[in-house]
Amino acid sequence: MTDEEEKLFGIEKLNIKRSEIPAVTHVDYSARIQTVTKDTNQRYHDLISKFKEKTGCPVIVNTSFNVRGEPIVNTPTDAFKCFMGTDLDYLVIGDCILDKNKQDQNLKKDYTKEFELD
Image (tube, rainbow, N blue to C red; front, side):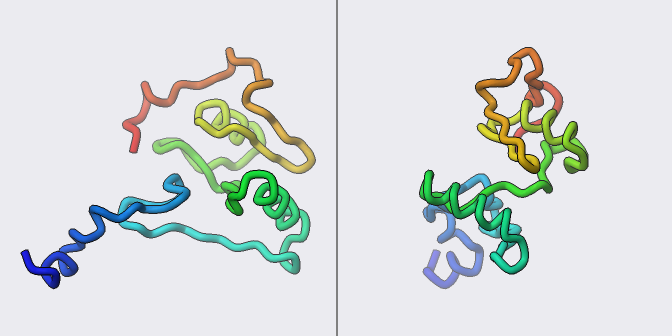
């Protein structure tokens, strides 16, 4: 196959690292990026800035999250259930920061038995 044919069919992407944060990069290399500025949401911007300072990663999953097959999180209870069924380490809701390691492990949910994983 020529270089032009590979580009046409997207084959050249097979050997490219998707992202430093693959969890937010779809298999077609797209992502649903949302930005936050101090002007639009000072508190959330401060949280993201502090997270970047501590981890080097300037990305936080926003409140629109779910596990495939489940509805999008809509309440704090939904968020907690989703949190306990995923590999997320922390959940921030308002002034509360939940550490997965400090939660009752009996509340963990195993979605792998319910849904095919990506």
